[in-house]
Image 1: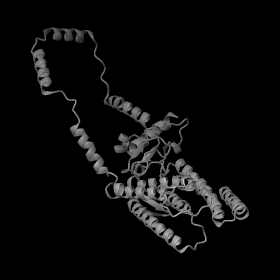
Image 2: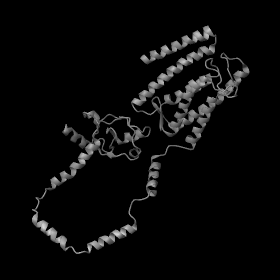
Image 3: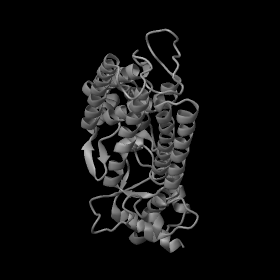
Image 4: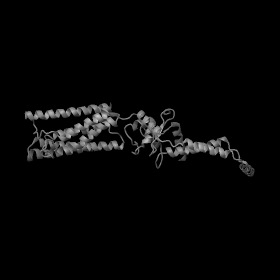
Length: 375
């Protein structure tokens, strides 16, 4: 609610300044609407920063309609208004046929660049795009938005030509020269459409695994050559043929001097074998926290503790940095849109992303019990 009041105050101030400047000082409808658009731009920028901080806090990807359509719409709107604005309307290129005003450079350029990058993300980074509660294929969404941008660019040019020919419009047309921001945006969007849309795409998991196999095949092996093998075999054979009289006498004397050790039961041998493995698992799985609780062992996505009968076939994946657990299927779904841990914001190594170490649920529960006993 406080942000809404802040946005309302900013809009009221911009309207007040527009009335003073556009009605009192220099009567012009374009100047009044320009000040109103300045206030609207400030409100949208503050709201965008708030959304970015919110998504960064939860480490969520920006695959929503707000982050894709919002900046593109604002950039196109303010670049088109550069034909009518009474603020910062002079041409930075002087008398050249191409037009670039400080208005479009300050208000439209950042959002146009962000919009083109969001289109690139639709083709190369995102799998889906959220339209409120619905989901759409990201590539199809990128195709539709890019085509709409191109059509809107051509329609705006026709509109300005018609307005200039008729000469009747409530706003004063400043120039008819093509805006360099719109030209660059349309060219970049066409490049992204063809380069990353039609002739490119994200590599699938099978392609990544096939590429890794090829690299392993063509990687120079560290195995010894056949010549070294033959020499080592010959040396071992020659040493084996030597007499062993001295060695046998030494072993006999040592065996007579040393007393026999008591036979260790099988149960103790098993305990010695299992203890180091459990300790290694505890070091690998134990979450990084000052005081451990059950919250530290919950899945970072569904916030539920591992359950052996229910989660038997799912498995557990632990973050390499903070050691927080997650179900393997949810962890893999998360990696499709983000390379950061959802809990600690640390980058997950590429090798771990390709081949995450999946721990059985039963083993993870055993480690949890061992850590609970240590308390």
